[in-house]
Image (cartoon, rainbow, N blue to C red; front, top):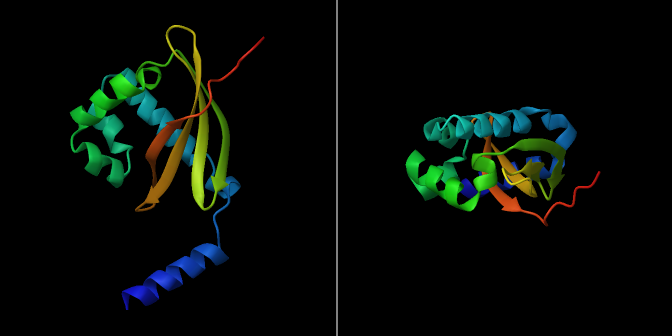
Length: 135
């Protein structure tokens, strides 16, 4: 029975893939809300925008906050952010974000987004090549 349900779900996803343009601004709204929570030092609220998988890995908001402060300081205290393209690759929704840190250095990050219970959540963030921004 489980195999049948899985096969039907996979066929529906294949037959009716969600296009990035159909997603709208929801991923940007979630990312912006998490950045606002970091700026306010509200790690509990920031943690609420992470997927269940991320929450299981870090267990507590404080553990999650420590990881962000140490591994993604430009996200913890961004001086400026610019949303770039939203796209779907192999069925996964990605939102690219350009972030300027307090020292003026630009970073390009890719946010992996996932829908859980009808809401978008952040399922991971990866660094892309260092952004080269000119005038």
